[in-house]
Every structure is written in C-alpha cells, then in structure tokens.
Length: 413
Image 1 (cartoon, rainbow, N blue to C red):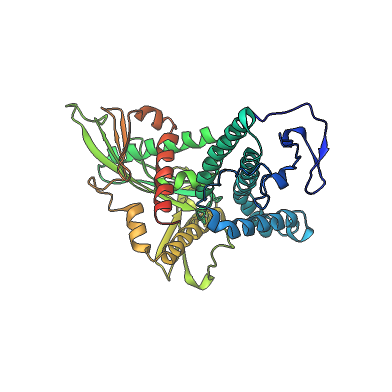
Image 2 (image 1 turned 120 degrees about the vertical axis):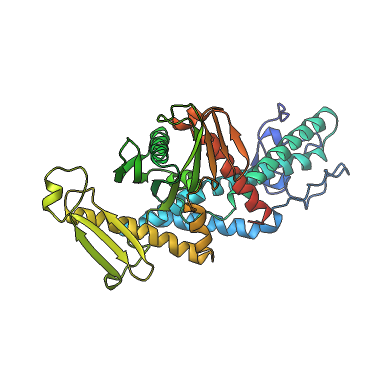
C-alpha cells in the first residue's frame, strides 16, 4: 500500500505540475508520476533505485506502438460515413476492431503498470525505513503484474486465424461401421447442436440425409455466432466410437467411425466463381416430401469443373432454393481449398479432415463403457463422455486451443 502523509497538495519540483501527497518523499521533494518514473533524475539522497529488469517485449515496442496507432485510426474510421455506408468495409473494420481491442487494452495496462513500477523504484532511492519498504512492496507487486501482462501480450500478439469471426459450415458423415456409424454420426450432430445452444449460436440445417434406422448418412449445418470458427475449427477429422450397438445381441463392443469436415462460411467477396466453370444438373428429389418430389425437378447438383468439387442439394422445396444452398456450400468448399493451397498443404489438410474414414484413423475416441473421451492429437483424456455428448465440449476445445498457442509460441509465432 502506498504511504501517504498529511502534506497538502503541492507542485512537482521538476515540471511544476500538480502532484498528490503520495508522491511526496521524506526528502521533501515532490514528484508527479511522470517525473518520478524518469530514469534521468538521480536521487538527492545518493541512493540509487533498484534497476528495472530487462523485459522480453522491449524489442517489439515499435510494433506495439504501431498496433496502437492502427487501432486509433480504425476506431476513428468506424464513425465515418465512408465506412458506415459500405457494409463489406464496416464488417471487416468491426471484425478487426474486435480483434485489436483486447490487445490494445493489454498494451495500455502494461504501460500504466510499468509507470507505477518505475515510480516506486525511483522513490525507493529517495526514502528510507518503513517508507522505503512500502515502495519496495509496491514495486514488487507491479513487477509481478507486469510479468502476467507480458505473458498475456505474447499470446495476443500471435497471428490471428484468418477465419476468426467467420461462421462455420460443418459436414458430418457416417463412415466405417454400417448403420452404427450412421447412428454415431447423428450423435455427433446432436452434440454439436447442444454445444451451439450452450454458446448462444444459431444453427441452420442445410441438409440432412436420414438413414434407415434413425441415423444419418450425411448432414450439413451452418453455425452462426461469436467465435463459431474459433471453437469449432478443431473438430474436423475422423471421430471413432467404441460402444455396444443397440443391434448387438451378445453385448460386444463395436468400433465405428464418422467424419466431420469444418469449413469457414464463404461470402461472395471471399470467392469469385465464374459461371462458365459450373456444370449444373437438375433432377427429381428423392426421400421425404410426398408427391412433390416425384413430379418436380427441384434437386440441384453443381460441379465446379476446375476443381471437381461437387455439391448436391435437394432438401428445399424449390429448385432456386436448392441452387442457392448448393452455391453457399460450394463457396465454402472452394474457400477452404484456396486457403489450403496458400499453405502449400491442400492434400494433407483434406486427408486430415476427411481421412479414409477407417476405424484405425481418428482424431478423437468416444468410449462409452469407460465414459471416456480422448483427443489423440494432444493426448488429452476426459472421463466425462456423457457431459461432452450433452454439449459440454469446452474442456476439450480449451485444451486444443492451449496446445495450439503453445506450439505457435514455440515456433516464434
């Protein structure tokens, strides 16, 4: 706690600015915070303040200053008609502002606490006894807070995921294991729907292809909400289940799998599609829908000829609606392909997302008998399977996010 005296408000002996009694020392030399933190002043008492430890972030100070300048310019631009009148620019500027806000808040707090620490160290050189001990305690507390802020700043300075802030299109398919795989695919779909509900996201069902025994052959969902991509991006890949199927009369544990593909929702400005590159087929829908599906060519299949990506849609009631949905999914698939190419690992990325769907391939195992969920990418195990299936995925996602940050820091960002 900073010592205070009964001395009235005075002027700083260096700059003449007003200073509070807390900056008055036993040497009767009043200092404002700025002057007290200055290293150019040598204490009259002849004692020197303890040196400030060298900070690991000192070398990036220019970058921090640049970030703060960019933030101020961005903040000012958000109130201009030029930005407010352009929805695309407003969306991008708002997204960037949201990304920079916690970083700038951390920079500013670090600057303030560093000033407090420097002032306390300076005043230690001008005091003695209990007063000096009080300033030492203040400096030590500030140094501890500085260390915490610097660690947080290191994480905030990591390059952001270019898809942060985007919505998510997720495709879930039954893989190896027959109808049990399809049942597991439905369980995964319901798990993600519950996870979305917990986080307050909205979910649009783009397509669901039901299987014969209550499972799903395939489902395509659109998740909309804050941090949808940030939280769901780890879910892509083969998921394995170990349990006794409802159809198993001998009580034996079976292993089945389903695949999950996660893509950022692409907007028209993200992906340019030439109409000449599309092959569009229409045909009669099959499945639920009554007589309508047998009399109208409402189903749509779109093939992107340069990449061979095919999207088929039949869940909507009209051909125009199915075409719009198919184009929505196609844009997201092409955006993902483009991003993979930029990272020079398109094929490896798609294999890691889809895999062969075999039982031996997995990113995560759901073991019902042991009430266990294990993420094999980081060796993380949680004995709360039922809670996870009910939508409590945060412990798993948090562990994956922490591992990603640690690897980024180890790689130098």
